[in-house]
Image 1 (tube, rainbow, N blue to C red):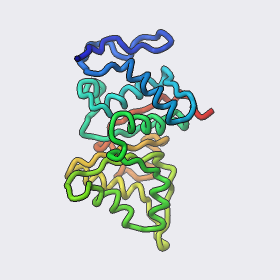
Image 2 (image 1 turned 90 degrees about the vertical axis):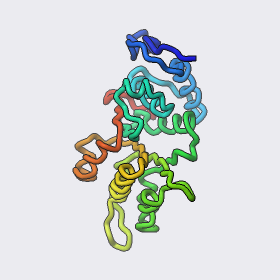
Image 3 (image 1 turned 45 degrees about the vertical axis):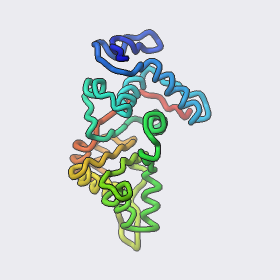
Image 4 (image 1 turned 135 degrees about the vertical axis):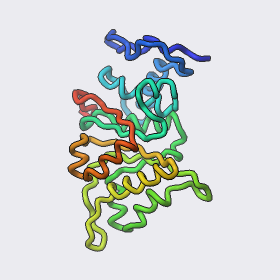
Length: 228
């Protein structure tokens, strides 16, 4: 049964609702947010609480991973693209993506990688790592591309393989951009970097392509560090 998502998601402090117009959706987001908190508590090993300042980006991500087209389009997101989740250190970007990955899809179909681990893998194996994350990132015996999530973009640094420097994540994202254009390969990324910092680390070429590849979902700069 469809619900009209009209003024149904108030903040816990009695603040005004996130949404003010009626949108047809099959999901009850009030209940789903409670499920996110419960699932997060199990995954994190301590009480997981959604703070009001984080509610808007979490709702956008929840609708995106549920493929709730009406809500997603009203939020200005495009299901043909991946998501770039940004925000201050410790705001919970990685945690919410990991929670939604297991709640709203089959985890094996949303492969999660630490950017730092990818870089270290390149230092051991070389260019084959870049190929494995781009041109060879397909399901066996199919032309269906794999969706990858890269966590903490910007922490990996430049690495060497046989004396040659390589910005591994830049090469992977540029290659996946080509696959995005040719076959719809989807990529998701979390990062503490803002747009100017991304350009400084990875160059203007990648930054401009990231605009095409990703929906931007940003946590508020005032979102507090949940690790404290």
